Image (cartoon, rainbow, N blue to C red; front, top):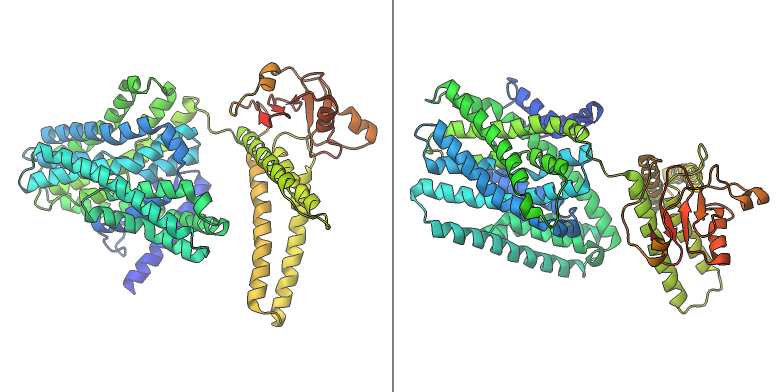
Length: 612
């Protein structure tokens, strides 16, 4: 009962801390580590010793896997050089630098123990980087680099740590270090690919979402244990399997299985990530108590902890600014380089790895305090100042308006492909099914375009639809619940109908959330592909006070306006009743229109279905 009470209490604190962090606009990990540190001194809170086996086997695999399946393999591949250099070269440099500092400042510690603590504090944490970087809205490429680095760097650090621990036990040959690293990396890669192939084979034959999700839960632990059993890297095995399974999910899983897995892992990651940082804070009390019995003077202990913290920060910043030649084929802006250097926050893996250091290692209690200081210091100092530095450096966050335009373009291209397939199919349509399909696809595509600028202070058709349909669903749900209370309809049938209503309502909610996140104004699309028509029709100044003459003549209202770049004709968009811009294209075959909305300069090619 005491253990159950402790677990329930920790879960409640985690949820409360996450809720309070949203209100205070502070990343939850930073708040929870402070709460945990304070709680460690509360008499009724039991002392919790975070064992390395619990973290490395119980917490690390699911955390790595949940991050890996959400990481874009395409984006990772585009930045693989930077990511792999950070995951290997920077870890080695940081380990050596910290080892030298600790060896210099702690008498009698020895090089083996100094290198061991260097390997412990070298790798930034995947959870910390993602939690802070995504919340403050760093550029996607920066987030990709930070996530990719933190997914793979643990493998390098753990190999270095195992080598140092072996040296503490009686020596290790330099050749063995290289062999160990190759075996860890290569073995982890091969086992990760093998796990991916096995799970992919199973998923193609399993359509039950519950069974599929159960397999998903087993995958990270199976990949980790299988790799560690042959002395390969469990970290690399889990990450590789997760990256490949996430990339191939649209092909090897059913839609229902993907939805179930996505929601399940988001929940698991939310609970585990925040619990981890609470556990880190709860270690403070007993670590300081052990340090109080150290033979080193207090001033020397404070000095080595502070010096190590400064070393890991400075070495990372120096590395980012001195290795620009390695990135000359794919350079980063200086401000982005600095942010990547500053965002090297450590987390639970650092603290867990510290407990691997043998108990008979010289000054082990001080080494544990060094690890805690680096974790807490980087999280609090760098985590709290990162948003301010991002603003001061003028680093832009991903633009929701540009995302909305890219989303609308992609949906338009997907719909056109669907319509093309519809034309190829051989069927007899006596019931107007094709017209219904076209109407539903058009509604989905138009709703995406309406997330951009529209007539000021007017409800768009998709917003009106969402509001009316939402009211209808509420009435439908109330009727179903009333019927349920009579007990005359099987409960399974009632649950199925309620589930159908929930899915439709969630789609309305998702659309509303996307519209609220899009800001209008200053939208100049910078992505996508070019075509000859877009090249021949560059952006122009739109007509002052534009309007759709056809709408005015018909007595209808437009949603948003498009201007032909061939003859300057202004017509209404396809969400409008008249669809006069598209009608003008069919009449004249003028290929390119430009948004005539204020502060928007994106163009659309009717011929190639491309945004410019």
